[in-house]
Image (cartoon, rainbow, N blue to C red; front, side):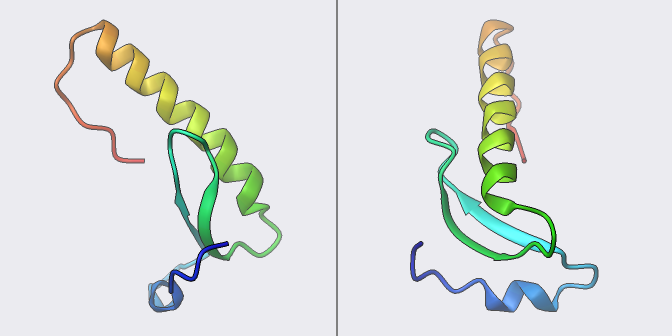
Length: 68
């Protein structure tokens, strides 16, 4: 894991967990929290979703951005 400091994010109301992810590889660069949620698995799986959204947006020539 990286030495990125995500500590301030756990002050957000309703915080469960956070992960900073390289969306191309699906690898988590830094994580915090998560409780019983496996953030490593969640980041890898959500990265697949983001890549799929990118492919569809490109195929449809959409200019929108993805915020996941």
